[in-house]
Length: 359
Image 1: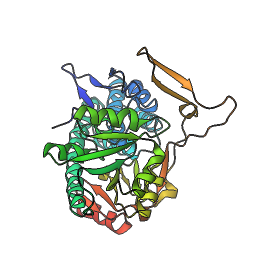
Image 2: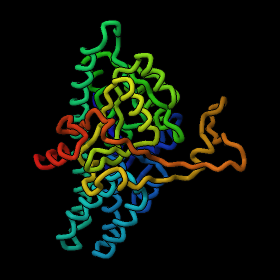
Image 3: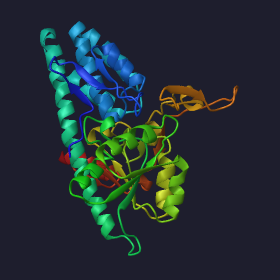
């Protein structure tokens, strides 16, 4: 089963995607037709997930070049789009790739070349994600064979946030193995962290797995440690927004606590990691900027009312301060393996350097 694409072109070559702020209760397709609309979609989290952000940024740069293909405009648009989400390294990677592709060209050829490069980024993402899913599926099947004899039935895997097809062009990273295992009838059950404050797990991962018919259960963010203690988690798989050169991982806030709990209970902690998400210019976690988002995301939640309509409600007292870091940092020592499109590697400087030397 190939998951539907999250970003696609219609017969008129318009860039279309789902407004993820409206899921899971409304499926609203939005058109991205300018640099401004791409920038807004990224900053407002209508699109989110490092690979998808990168792809939308690439198309945004292509739209900008249609308006003005000068060197000055290219640099301005590059910086404008980059500022929309600072933590996810794929955005810089994709923008840089498009910029490097078009700079040697005459201005009249730049927009078309950028459009082609954005499409290539999308196609490569699909292949990359399927490869990551295949490597993770192999690891999970091996983990099932090592289970205690008292543990039977589906393999139980915990995931945090949404690193599925909605965060990419197709398949996703952390969720990709579940689709591939489902294809061969291998039983797997996913514990889905709600992922406060934006509830990407409860709203997006659960919706996505439900659409695919993959067994899953939504849990409160703080329930994972108990489930691990009770022996009800066989592995943890998360995505990543940036990986430093030493293997430290930046991902949705709450990831670090899952890694600590997994280490305490001897449970493998895998990071689904496209090589494009590895930032070799960041030596370690200290070099990664953590995005602080609007406190309203924490103080208010949106949900569906009994009459089917949606509403936003306040959940903290008037006058209480709120701090909303979007990501946290997981030390490399807590990561069992970084699982790239080329296969699993240790989360170490040497292994990362070797990966890029070989590919």
